[in-house]
Length: 114
Length: 113
Image (tube, rainbow over the protein chains, first blue to last red):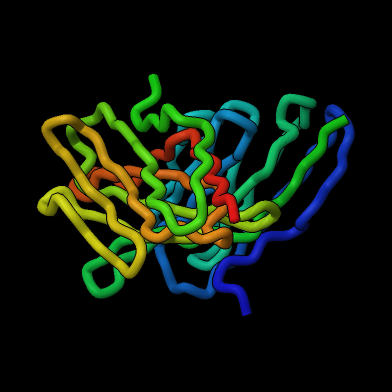
């Protein structure tokens, strides 16, 4: 079973609609992240959370909101979707094991806003 | 203001030769650096990392070099294999501050058979 899962994997929506992308992890990590990937722009941080009560804005949080429902769950919402939010969205967790820090990514959600 | 930069969007290398991917950073607070590999339709996967107290870390065919004075790191893949063809991202964090991973824009590596 995958350590970080995302649902849905693909989504098509219309401008103005509210949508939620969900992320679950079994790594037991406290730190969770949401990124979007656009061609030529790499991975840009939208929001991150270091525990259930700690939510922080990333580089491009405008138009997005998040909810950390539990240690294992971190959801991303687009309150009123717009076409330039069409992108590939990744959830990730991070933690330290054996002295090494790393992030683990989900498989991504491809979102198309018409 | 891009704190982590990968100035080469693409790189082509012959199978068996060395691939060198470069990354520059501007924030002196970064003290831990990572490389990720990404195939189409998959999430990035961790490849190798290095702490700022070291200048080299090696794992099999992959070696990461860190030059702190130049704020530059590089990933060497030797020998390169067709299966290494992917997009490579470097990332940086400050472990004494926030664990806020900042990524570069990626380099697409193509290994030619």
